[in-house]
Length: 467
Image (cartoon, rainbow, N blue to C red; front, side, top):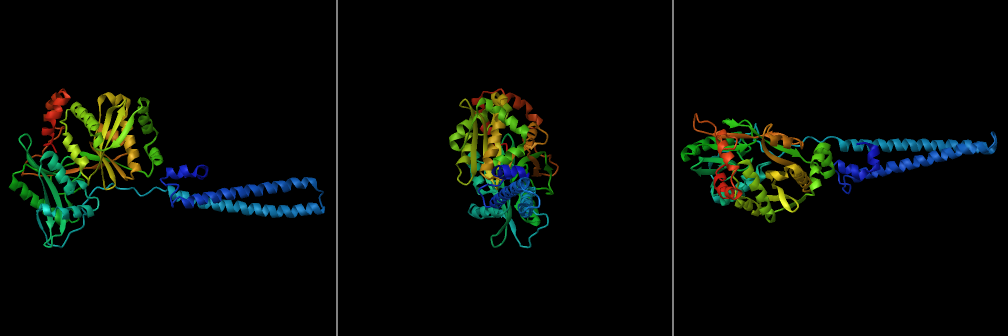
């Protein structure tokens, strides 16, 4: 950090480095700045005194007693000036070192994505079995104590999914004879005429999968799940995770785009850069307004979301699904809606977990694309995330190099690969129940032309079976 800029506006420069000027961390720097300013004033005063004595020489005769007195005074003033100059150099040196330490790049933070340690195994004996509902509190405790474990594996999501979609969820776990949980996986079961019978961990979201600290537990869980799949007659089990290296068929076409967040909005401005800031400001010509909230914004959010899904040719979730999430007391969920002339034009659904704010669903009506309200909304969301002290913002899942990927990349977000593993009958191909599948193109084209009210009636019963 430049010392001149800091001395000119110390509070502004501290904010730019993510330091609250009123905090205890800022106090030593502000005190050093005050000492430097005082040393500069002292040096200026000594310089003026030296100049005055130099002028006084012109008024006295050489060799006179007054002349000798001025010589003695000049020596004393010069010595004081030298000491003041040295003191200023020392104070500035200390301040520069402190500012350099403050501005030194922090070690790159990693987002809270769960990984099974590669070198750990347990010597405890255990069996893999389905947990009873009475054991769910113990499972909840296990998930919460496991660093970076996805919140979607918690029992509250079991209830939300069952309430909104009527899909049952089983939790399979490795349990010792004493009842200690060493790992596990929740599986939501799908059964429909259109898409068949299968299970997913976890559906509708990006993060789920095997949770354990031990490689031998992970292998035992997979082995047991293969037997469960065969017994239940499921076509496949899909395990959604960011975990690499499981010995299973896998697809890794998708990535999460995640942005580390600074400590304040001034620093966020610098991080985003001039080009992105300029794009965000374009919408201001249309005087947009933003609201963050909960259920009171659901109708506005849902209308924007439903219109956008119809225009994309994708069946829309029921409003009940979003209401169930927003209403749950243990889920950190909220909505953001952008309005132009009082009409909702952009909207997002926000979920917070493990210090990261995620936006699994976001939409803008086509008529607002020319107003850049989508860019403006994301900037408001990032400001909100910084204010709420989240460490990361998850822009959601994208296919590499797709339009959504490029949109998220411009904000500085980095890709983190998803690995979706499959337990399948021998010789069966990987399933592809998603809009990218070419066989759904004709259906998508028809869907785009349907009236909105039709999609809101027909869509939810279909999409509830698309994980």
